[in-house]
Image 1 (cartoon, one colour):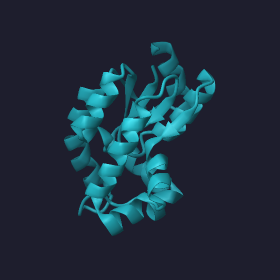
Image 2: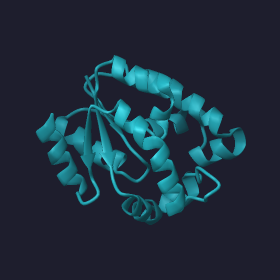
Image 3: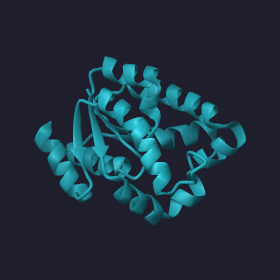
Image 4: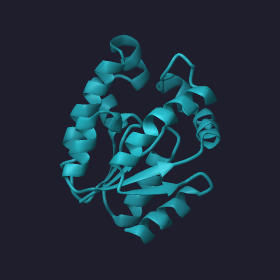
Length: 171
C-alpha cells in the first residue's frame, strides 16, 4: 500500500508529499514530474504543442505505472482523478488516498507565489489562471476528489509539517 495525495494545484501535494515520504522512509514520486520526464518537455509545452488531451493521456499512462508501487508517497496532478480510469486504478490497488483541500484564495496565493508556475504551468481554462479559474475548477473537480479519496485534510491553515503530522496521526 502507498499513500496517494490528490488535490488542486497549490494544495501542497509535492511539498507535503516529500516531507511525508522522508518521515516514513519511503520514496516520493510526483506524477507531473514523471509526465515531464516521459514527454521531454514541460507541462506548459505539452499543453501548447499537443493539447490537454495529449497531456491527460500521458498522465494516465504514468498513473497506471505509479499505482502499482508499494510503500511510496505518490503525488498526483490536480486533474488526474477527473479521468475515471485513473481513480479506478488508484482505488483498485487499495492505497490510502488523501485529498489535500484548501480554500480558493489560499490556492491562488500559493500558486502565484510559486516562481515556476508561470514558466512551467499553463492556465487551465480561458479564465487565465486567476481566482475565477480556481473557483470554477474546484466546483468541477471537488466531487471527483471526494469520490476518489479515503480521507480529507484541510490544509488551508496548516504548515507542511503540521499537515504531515496530521496525516501520520490518521494513518
